[in-house]
Length: 107
Image (tube, helix red, strand yellow):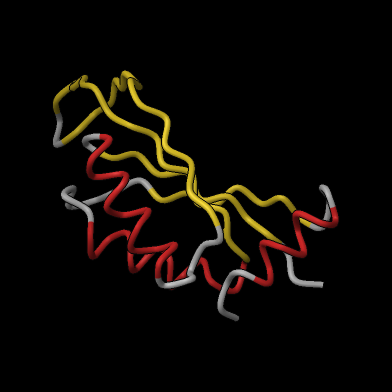
């Protein structure tokens, strides 16, 4: 059975997260996207401690599409080095939901 994965991404704004979600889900690279506004980030960037407001974008997809989703996110993202991290789910979860996710993505 194909494994599913959540891709954790951060974006500069809710609008950017929505645009990326529309692109990735529209192309059937992910079955669903969740957008969480109002995240505060603290991070090192180019030797400097930075902080700022971001939005979280969670993309639900299958493991065999991770590379394609990552490429699509990078192409649409405003950051030169966007966060795109796969969180493996494995083969657990609600079987009906997993079947829906697999049916709604290209593979």
